[in-house]
Length: 360
Image (cartoon, rainbow, N blue to C red; front, top):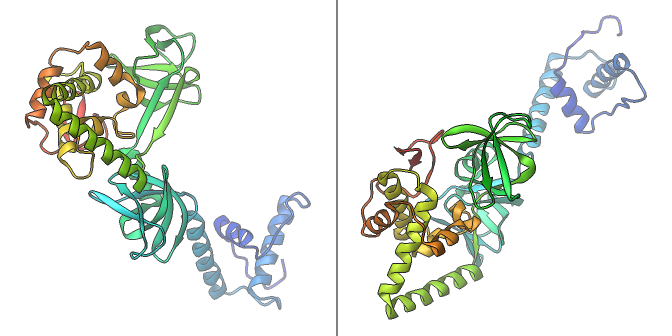
């Protein structure tokens, strides 16, 4: 160090930002740690004053401000997740303009991936839908991640004929139960790469990740073509209902009862009615399909529907007691959860608690 020079200890983040910005580079393999730090110090001095003058407080402040800008820009690029922040639906357009043609819709709780951002608009991909949406109705960064964590679904598929449920997360632990490919798992947490904790008969138990597939699902938007196809299918279903209202009504009742069995078969009658009410609240809402089958089989909405379990229960007709009664009551307009349109296992979400589930 040159005699008479002041010694400044710069934050590591500042040094890294300077290095990332290309203001100076070091060959870490060619020099040792002490020599590296000396080079950093000398390099910073040259950046501040190439003539070799003293490092001033003002220069340090300017560099700090520069590092904060670089850090903010870097953090903004860390996640490409985007979530929709609307009550019903958001138009997605071909170009970044309100005057541009509409190419699809993003519904409440939908998410996607950022492709490009400019002038207060974001080009995104959500399922098959690609287009521009106004930033005014979108969430980014930590806000987007928080919403995704709140509304996303963990879909677990058992990929073996028999899955062992153990008392502890190791292969020597006691086997407390067996699950088949048609059974469902309620994940509690990821223990490590090899084990997940699950709710099994109201106890925390463990299964190996080797025999299950876990997928985190966020609802996606719809293209205009997909919307047109869905609406045509619903129109045809209504025509069929007009020709055989009793039979179709019975099918709707049976389908809703099957979903209630899958989602709340082990709950009280109140728990079963609450699930049925959620489905009917969605049917009456403009943010969801307007038929029971449309709501139940909408992408990403109900895990048992996506896994095929609802269809199997519907075909078998093997329902838990009270499922038909709860389904009929919900269709008749009864509700014990108000206008709630969501539910999940009780835990970290506020809402109306009924048995083991919370509704909001």
